[in-house]
Length: 253
Image 1 (spheres, one colour):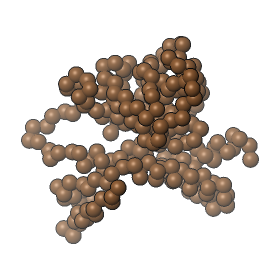
Image 2 (tube, one colour; image 1 turned 180 degrees about the vertical axis):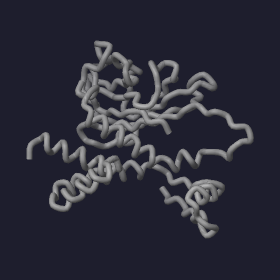
Image 3 (spheres, helix red, strand yellow; image 1 turned 135 degrees about the vertical axis):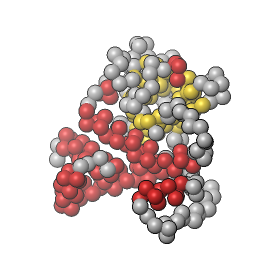
Image 4 (cartoon, helix red, strand yellow; image 1 turned 135 degrees about the horizontal axis):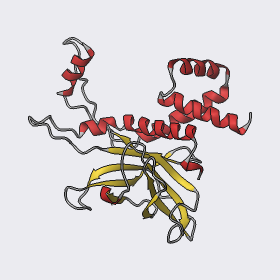
Protein backbone atom coordinates (compact mmCIF):
# COMPACT_ATOMS: atom_id res chain seq x y z
CA UNK A 1 0.00 0.00 0.00
CA UNK A 2 1.37 3.41 -0.97
CA UNK A 3 1.91 6.24 1.58
CA UNK A 4 -0.92 8.18 -0.08
CA UNK A 5 -3.29 5.22 0.37
CA UNK A 6 -2.23 4.95 4.02
CA UNK A 7 -3.04 8.64 4.54
CA UNK A 8 -6.43 8.19 2.86
CA UNK A 9 -7.24 5.24 5.13
CA UNK A 10 -6.24 7.23 8.21
CA UNK A 11 -8.44 10.15 7.13
CA UNK A 12 -11.37 7.87 6.26
CA UNK A 13 -11.13 6.13 9.63
CA UNK A 14 -11.04 9.46 11.46
CA UNK A 15 -14.13 10.72 9.64
CA UNK A 16 -15.91 7.41 10.32
CA UNK A 17 -15.23 7.61 14.07
CA UNK A 18 -16.35 11.24 14.44
CA UNK A 19 -19.43 10.66 12.27
CA UNK A 20 -18.82 13.01 9.34
CA UNK A 21 -19.27 10.39 6.59
CA UNK A 22 -22.60 10.45 4.74
CA UNK A 23 -24.89 7.42 4.84
CA UNK A 24 -23.62 5.97 1.57
CA UNK A 25 -19.99 6.75 2.43
CA UNK A 26 -20.39 5.17 5.84
CA UNK A 27 -21.88 1.97 4.40
CA UNK A 28 -19.10 1.75 1.83
CA UNK A 29 -16.45 2.26 4.51
CA UNK A 30 -17.98 -0.42 6.76
CA UNK A 31 -17.97 -2.86 3.84
CA UNK A 32 -14.27 -2.10 3.22
CA UNK A 33 -13.48 -2.40 6.92
CA UNK A 34 -14.94 -5.93 7.14
CA UNK A 35 -12.38 -7.13 4.60
CA UNK A 36 -9.43 -4.94 5.63
CA UNK A 37 -7.74 -5.50 9.00
CA UNK A 38 -5.62 -2.36 8.57
CA UNK A 39 -8.78 -0.23 8.39
CA UNK A 40 -10.04 -1.85 11.58
CA UNK A 41 -6.77 -0.94 13.30
CA UNK A 42 -7.07 2.67 12.10
CA UNK A 43 -10.61 2.90 13.52
CA UNK A 44 -9.47 1.50 16.87
CA UNK A 45 -6.58 3.98 16.94
CA UNK A 46 -8.94 6.94 16.40
CA UNK A 47 -11.31 5.65 19.08
CA UNK A 48 -8.41 5.40 21.53
CA UNK A 49 -7.33 8.98 20.77
CA UNK A 50 -10.78 10.42 21.42
CA UNK A 51 -11.33 8.25 24.50
CA UNK A 52 -8.05 9.62 25.85
CA UNK A 53 -9.50 13.11 25.47
CA UNK A 54 -12.77 12.24 27.23
CA UNK A 55 -10.84 10.70 30.13
CA UNK A 56 -9.45 14.15 30.97
CA UNK A 57 -12.93 15.57 31.60
CA UNK A 58 -14.83 15.52 34.88
CA UNK A 59 -18.40 14.19 34.43
CA UNK A 60 -21.10 16.78 35.16
CA UNK A 61 -24.76 15.81 35.58
CA UNK A 62 -27.36 17.66 33.52
CA UNK A 63 -29.54 20.05 35.56
CA UNK A 64 -32.83 18.28 36.45
CA UNK A 65 -34.91 21.05 34.86
CA UNK A 66 -33.48 20.19 31.42
CA UNK A 67 -34.91 16.67 31.33
CA UNK A 68 -38.60 17.68 30.93
CA UNK A 69 -37.59 19.96 28.05
CA UNK A 70 -35.63 17.12 26.41
CA UNK A 71 -38.59 14.77 26.89
CA UNK A 72 -40.98 17.31 25.34
CA UNK A 73 -38.65 17.80 22.36
CA UNK A 74 -38.46 14.03 21.83
CA UNK A 75 -42.20 13.54 22.31
CA UNK A 76 -41.64 11.20 25.25
CA UNK A 77 -44.29 10.47 27.85
CA UNK A 78 -44.19 10.93 31.64
CA UNK A 79 -42.16 7.73 32.05
CA UNK A 80 -39.15 9.61 30.63
CA UNK A 81 -37.16 10.56 33.73
CA UNK A 82 -33.74 11.93 34.45
CA UNK A 83 -31.24 9.21 35.36
CA UNK A 84 -29.82 9.15 38.85
CA UNK A 85 -26.34 10.68 38.62
CA UNK A 86 -23.50 8.42 39.66
CA UNK A 87 -20.84 9.72 42.07
CA UNK A 88 -17.64 10.92 40.41
CA UNK A 89 -14.67 8.59 40.66
CA UNK A 90 -11.76 9.56 42.89
CA UNK A 91 -8.94 10.76 41.82
CA UNK A 92 3.47 25.28 5.55
CA UNK A 93 1.46 22.38 4.56
CA UNK A 94 -0.64 23.33 7.58
CA UNK A 95 -2.09 26.41 5.89
CA UNK A 96 -3.52 24.29 3.04
CA UNK A 97 -4.79 20.78 2.29
CA UNK A 98 -8.58 20.45 2.13
CA UNK A 99 -8.77 16.88 3.41
CA UNK A 100 -6.50 17.62 6.36
CA UNK A 101 -8.59 20.62 7.43
CA UNK A 102 -11.83 18.67 7.07
CA UNK A 103 -10.44 16.14 9.50
CA UNK A 104 -9.09 18.78 11.91
CA UNK A 105 -12.44 20.58 11.88
CA UNK A 106 -14.26 17.32 12.45
CA UNK A 107 -12.02 16.40 15.36
CA UNK A 108 -12.57 19.82 16.88
CA UNK A 109 -16.33 19.31 16.61
CA UNK A 110 -16.01 15.86 18.15
CA UNK A 111 -14.10 17.35 21.07
CA UNK A 112 -16.84 19.96 21.48
CA UNK A 113 -19.44 17.19 21.73
CA UNK A 114 -17.25 15.36 24.26
CA UNK A 115 -17.05 18.51 26.39
CA UNK A 116 -20.74 19.38 26.09
CA UNK A 117 -21.71 18.04 29.52
CA UNK A 118 -19.19 20.36 31.12
CA UNK A 119 -20.55 23.39 29.30
CA UNK A 120 -24.19 22.46 29.97
CA UNK A 121 -23.42 21.83 33.62
CA UNK A 122 -22.15 25.37 33.96
CA UNK A 123 -25.41 26.91 32.66
CA UNK A 124 -27.71 28.61 35.13
CA UNK A 125 -31.54 28.58 35.04
CA UNK A 126 -32.86 30.89 32.35
CA UNK A 127 -33.52 34.45 33.62
CA UNK A 128 -36.78 36.25 32.94
CA UNK A 129 -34.99 38.81 30.76
CA UNK A 130 -32.95 37.13 28.03
CA UNK A 131 -29.44 38.56 27.77
CA UNK A 132 -27.38 37.87 24.66
CA UNK A 133 -24.20 36.12 25.79
CA UNK A 134 -20.89 36.61 24.05
CA UNK A 135 -20.10 33.73 21.65
CA UNK A 136 -17.85 31.01 23.01
CA UNK A 137 -15.29 29.14 20.95
CA UNK A 138 -13.21 26.03 21.43
CA UNK A 139 -10.27 24.69 19.42
CA UNK A 140 -8.58 21.36 20.08
CA UNK A 141 -4.99 21.44 18.83
CA UNK A 142 -3.87 18.11 17.35
CA UNK A 143 -0.36 16.86 16.61
CA UNK A 144 0.02 16.33 12.83
CA UNK A 145 2.62 13.63 13.56
CA UNK A 146 1.24 11.84 16.63
CA UNK A 147 -2.44 12.44 15.86
CA UNK A 148 -3.42 13.11 19.47
CA UNK A 149 -4.80 16.22 21.16
CA UNK A 150 -2.19 18.18 23.11
CA UNK A 151 -3.65 21.63 23.80
CA UNK A 152 -7.04 23.35 23.98
CA UNK A 153 -7.87 26.97 23.12
CA UNK A 154 -11.06 28.25 24.77
CA UNK A 155 -12.74 31.61 25.28
CA UNK A 156 -12.99 32.74 28.89
CA UNK A 157 -13.84 35.75 31.02
CA UNK A 158 -10.56 36.05 32.88
CA UNK A 159 -9.38 38.13 35.82
CA UNK A 160 -6.03 38.31 34.03
CA UNK A 161 -7.46 40.83 31.57
CA UNK A 162 -9.61 43.94 31.89
CA UNK A 163 -12.80 43.17 33.89
CA UNK A 164 -15.60 42.24 31.50
CA UNK A 165 -13.22 41.68 28.57
CA UNK A 166 -13.24 38.29 26.86
CA UNK A 167 -10.02 36.36 26.38
CA UNK A 168 -8.76 33.12 24.93
CA UNK A 169 -6.89 30.65 27.09
CA UNK A 170 -4.36 28.10 25.82
CA UNK A 171 -4.30 25.07 28.13
CA UNK A 172 -2.04 21.97 27.91
CA UNK A 173 -3.82 18.60 28.05
CA UNK A 174 -0.86 16.43 28.92
CA UNK A 175 2.68 16.33 30.29
CA UNK A 176 5.16 19.06 29.50
CA UNK A 177 6.49 19.12 25.95
CA UNK A 178 10.07 17.94 25.40
CA UNK A 179 11.49 21.04 23.70
CA UNK A 180 15.10 20.82 22.45
CA UNK A 181 17.67 23.17 23.95
CA UNK A 182 17.82 26.48 22.10
CA UNK A 183 14.24 26.10 20.85
CA UNK A 184 10.87 27.43 21.99
CA UNK A 185 7.19 27.07 21.15
CA UNK A 186 5.36 29.97 19.51
CA UNK A 187 1.58 30.48 19.49
CA UNK A 188 -0.07 31.65 16.25
CA UNK A 189 -3.54 32.45 14.95
CA UNK A 190 -5.00 33.09 11.51
CA UNK A 191 -8.67 33.93 10.88
CA UNK A 192 -10.17 32.35 7.80
CA UNK A 193 -9.41 34.53 4.78
CA UNK A 194 -6.58 36.46 6.46
CA UNK A 195 -3.43 37.08 4.41
CA UNK A 196 -1.10 35.63 7.03
CA UNK A 197 -0.76 34.42 10.62
CA UNK A 198 -0.35 36.58 13.72
CA UNK A 199 1.97 35.67 16.59
CA UNK A 200 0.39 35.49 20.05
CA UNK A 201 3.70 35.06 21.84
CA UNK A 202 6.06 32.38 23.11
CA UNK A 203 4.84 29.45 25.18
CA UNK A 204 6.75 27.45 27.79
CA UNK A 205 6.08 23.71 28.19
CA UNK A 206 3.03 23.22 30.42
CA UNK A 207 2.24 26.95 30.51
CA UNK A 208 -1.33 28.29 30.50
CA UNK A 209 -1.49 31.38 28.28
CA UNK A 210 -4.27 34.00 28.42
CA UNK A 211 -4.65 36.50 25.54
CA UNK A 212 -7.36 39.22 25.39
CA UNK A 213 -9.63 38.79 22.38
CA UNK A 214 -8.92 42.44 21.53
CA UNK A 215 -5.31 41.41 20.75
CA UNK A 216 -6.46 38.89 18.13
CA UNK A 217 -6.89 39.78 14.44
CA UNK A 218 -10.29 38.07 14.64
CA UNK A 219 -12.13 35.19 16.28
CA UNK A 220 -14.86 33.18 14.57
CA UNK A 221 -15.65 29.68 13.33
CA UNK A 222 -12.64 28.10 11.59
CA UNK A 223 -10.11 30.56 13.06
CA UNK A 224 -6.79 28.72 12.98
CA UNK A 225 -4.56 28.26 16.03
CA UNK A 226 -1.22 26.49 16.07
CA UNK A 227 1.98 25.96 18.04
CA UNK A 228 5.25 25.78 16.14
CA UNK A 229 8.82 24.96 17.13
CA UNK A 230 10.99 28.05 16.70
CA UNK A 231 14.48 29.30 17.59
CA UNK A 232 14.91 30.78 21.07
CA UNK A 233 13.30 34.22 20.99
CA UNK A 234 10.74 33.20 18.37
CA UNK A 235 10.51 33.12 14.59
CA UNK A 236 12.75 35.67 12.85
CA UNK A 237 9.93 36.25 10.36
CA UNK A 238 6.33 37.48 10.69
CA UNK A 239 5.23 33.88 10.14
CA UNK A 240 6.26 30.43 11.42
CA UNK A 241 9.74 29.31 10.42
CA UNK A 242 9.75 25.91 12.12
CA UNK A 243 7.68 22.72 12.11
CA UNK A 244 4.10 22.61 13.39
CA UNK A 245 3.70 20.88 16.75
CA UNK A 246 -0.07 21.29 17.24
CA UNK A 247 -2.81 22.79 15.09
CA UNK A 248 -6.61 23.14 15.10
CA UNK A 249 -9.55 25.36 14.16
CA UNK A 250 -12.06 27.09 16.41
CA UNK A 251 -15.65 25.86 16.65
CA UNK A 252 -18.48 27.91 18.18
CA UNK A 253 -20.06 26.16 21.18
